[in-house]
Image 1 (tube, rainbow, N blue to C red):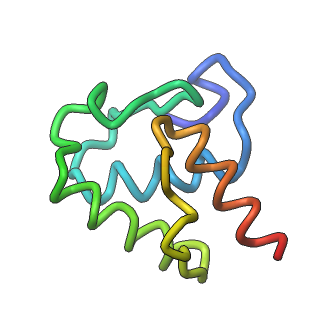
Image 2: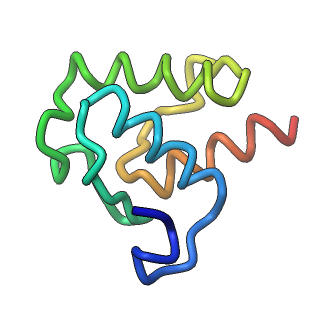
Length: 88
């Protein structure tokens, strides 16, 4: 499924995060929207979250600081933080 199949225009950052999540959770049918929360995604538990954060860091070639992900509740917020870290 590609972004045109999903019916919404999404940021390239969100699409790349989705690929990371799908790969790490082993489910290519996962569709992430800006308002998706980890609890909305089967298999995205606290351990998976750690792996997803590391996967996102690797995908984008960045390292989050201690406060970069504080209060991040949705995938859209994660994408915004990735964009902010990359803009530094």
